[in-house]
Image 1 (cartoon, rainbow, N blue to C red):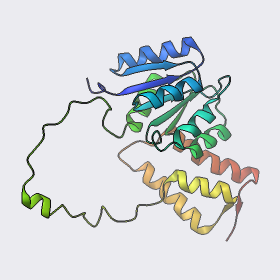
Image 2: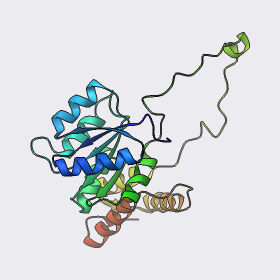
Image 3: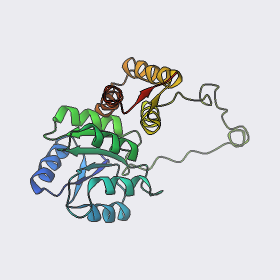
Length: 220
């Protein structure tokens, strides 16, 4: 199956939620393991490779925010994709998880189609459990003339929507320049082959909500 080899860690203090997500992942061809709390999740993540974490927020002891921060601040774990699946659906929680490095944010009860799409967007690398490739003989010419990057590959990328939103919220100001970056990021997202994520739509909502409430000021 297409998802074979991807190992997913489900972190939720509710046994029913863990069971529901585990069955959904198995149906879609994933291998999954369960953690009933944050400390157990980090222990498991540091003992074996995982490609994705489905993380609850409201857990006793170590909550999801603390787990997410620990994952993204650990040089050995920071590349692991994290999708938040939580009953907390306010914009402040979405923004906090965005700043901490979450790849997506879904609310409970989750929609299986939205979950499948979020996982597909978040898994950007090869699975941890894969067949070893056949070794190929490297010629002298290949060693002496490595491929040169094309101009496009070394060009500076546009600022991401997450980076722009974080900058605007942190400064509390929307300048002409930041507005241009913000608009361009939205345009690129809307017309990109890949659909915008729920967390990206929430980031856009955050800016307009903060503008209306006065938490962000428009400056020249």
